[in-house]
Image (cartoon, rainbow, N blue to C red; front, side):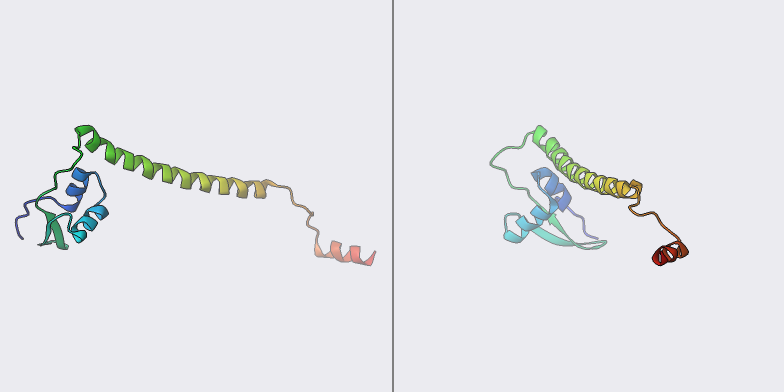
Length: 115
């Protein structure tokens, strides 16, 4: 194993306030310089230097971005569960609704045909 100096994808994403997928895009486009190093599960990117951002990040922005991402994720989950609850409520109403025609036995239906 090599000694890894630098930032992992996750650490770089947190420092920049973006997702790990965005960090990968930055590496592919050349905005970030990274190298591949062997690791336990295969090659991993190590970013040696993070760029100096034009807009300085304060401690508040670093701490609020993950919270904003989590809130967006939770709101999507709430929307999913709300739709699921509405669907279940509709199914329950269908189950509780009275039957349109009472069930009759076969001989009752047959007897009715003869009259």
